Amino acid sequence: MLSRRCIWVNGPVIVGAGPSGLAVGAGLKNQGVPFIILERADCIASLWQKRTYDRLKLHLPEQYCQLPYFPFPDDFPEYPTKHQFIKYLESYAKHFDINPNFNETVQSAKYDETFGLWRVKTISTGGPIPVEVEYICRWLAVATGENAEKVVPEFEGLEDFGGHVTHACDYKSGKSYFGERVLVVGRGNSGMEVSLDLCNHNANPSMVVRSSVHVLPREVFGTSTFEFAVSLMKWLPLWLVDKILIILAYLILGNIEKYGLKRPCLGPLELKNTAGKTPVLDIGALQKIKSGKIKIVPGIKKFSRGKVELVNGQTLDIDSVILATGYRSNVPSWLKENELFSNEGVPKNPFPNGWKSKGGLYAVGFTRRGLSGASLDAISVALDIAKTWKDETKQKKKSVAARHRRCISHF
Image (cartoon, rainbow, N blue to C red; front, side, top):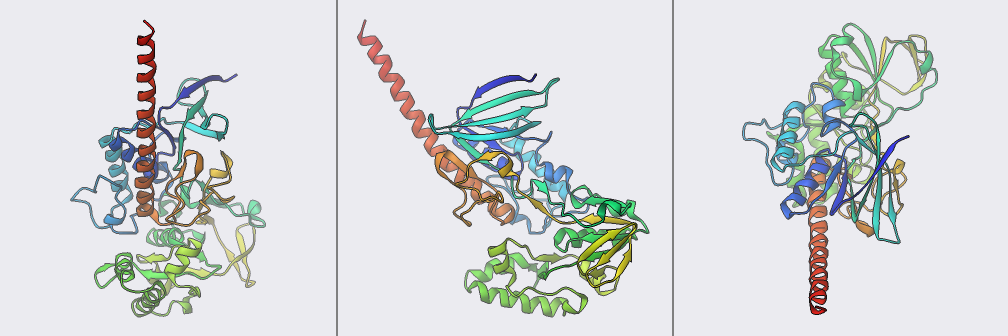
């Protein structure tokens, strides 16, 4: 039998202690608004700390990745490493005195129409015995992000394969794959980087590319491609910026279609905006593909013992499989509402209008625009909650003062 507790929160409950949740917390601290952050893991930014590979660096320059009110240290490189970014986030939490409730998994969050309050039920496993806790609050900020759960597709015969199968979230380094034939499923930034890392550790990766993909150079004219695109978009329409990026990619990287990497019909920025698909920023994998050290193969038909059969009829002997098949939101599993979030667990309204709903419900970090999008959301959410909180606190003080005066007048 679980022991139970009920806690009234005089401010918002924030679910998730990743960069998004921390950024909302910092904004609320600046406004003097109390809050609680609930985090299922035992640390901040658990995705970064526990589910990323060792060689990971931020894909965008530091100015697009730092959180509000607290810049990166001056000695950080343009593209900080995973470990530098984690250190920055820990300094961020310490600077704003943010102390999440760790080991606390939200089971459900439901709006009580009668009282105009949120009821957030959790299981806390931080103590000697699990405790069921219900938080009651006026505002709820969902900051669990787009990458809360790994996506593991089903493949015919995978259970009979017999070799090592892992998701990219559990991949750390290519050291343990030395000399192995590894099938990497997925052609996004993770699939490309894992394949490159495997190459660098003398493994033999084959990367499954089922659909089209944009591959762009990480830098053009000595500046980041992202920064270059942002600058162009101040003066030019998106379709024209896309055309310029594709021409530059062709000039710098060459014709990548002959290596099995077909470009989509939509431009890289339009595809990112409409479908949330991020272009691959090349950091060396393309050279390995051109040299044949990373082999590009089509889609998977089925697995068998030590083998994979591809859709083109080809069969490969393989030792291990790494699923770089992405992540998804877990919001639908615990948030009981259907106004703000879709069935896929992302806001129904596109950026920049997907951060707020009725009843004091907010979304942070679901913009498909990385850390810079999460920061913009966090600033909006913290200011909006602070305004209402301050107004309601003033009303309460006036109400208490009026009652106090009435009591005095009776004596």
